[in-house]
Length: 135
Image (cartoon, rainbow, N blue to C red; front, side, top):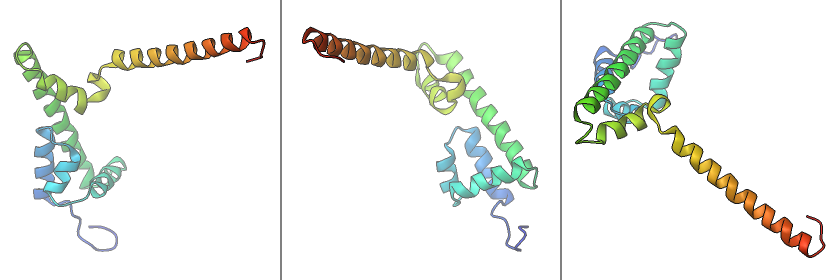
């Protein structure tokens, strides 16, 4: 129970549904709506779990295990059907970004943008120099 005496919204049924949704790679926002809680409530549970408070700590362990299972399931799908279906790869890339996103694409875009900016400045400097003005 909470300190002010209200019952926690984290019921066994609600927790089980959230864990199941996470295992099936449902976004937290959607999973929260399905069990009629706000994302803020969910993240409050996560914060309390990080402090070791029960039942939130046990719930968070289940959520983390479900996330791992969901990712592993997508990897299995990717390995078995990659030549035929790109959707598992796309979902991995979006859902588990730190490990699966395309890094080289972002770096290439940044380099191109910097090169364009530098060229524009050099051209402006040359034009001013040709006119006898300072940049």
